[in-house]
Image (cartoon, rainbow, N blue to C red; front, side, top):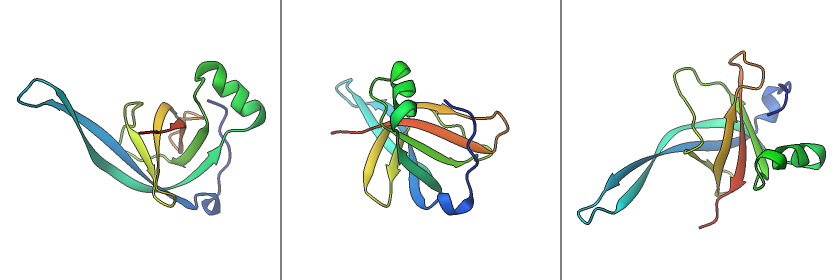
Length: 116
């Protein structure tokens, strides 16, 4: 994660839905994943480039995208969650979630594109 970027409201021009997974077992004992929406939020979705991409890939080789959104009080985001970029219809697996400056103002996700 890099240091906090100042993000103005106009940059949060994308819409994302964060989804969380619930795992249960069916009658055969197989794991079944059920996804539910945690919330839909304005966000800034961007592709990692240059030094930022190289830096992120030292920790997460598959990192390709970053997502910024405002901190949501009472909601905990986890790497097991998934993000739907509503505008484009793309899904992202979350590699890391962070609070860039520790002030609970913004949330930063490092993601890879989900491929079925």
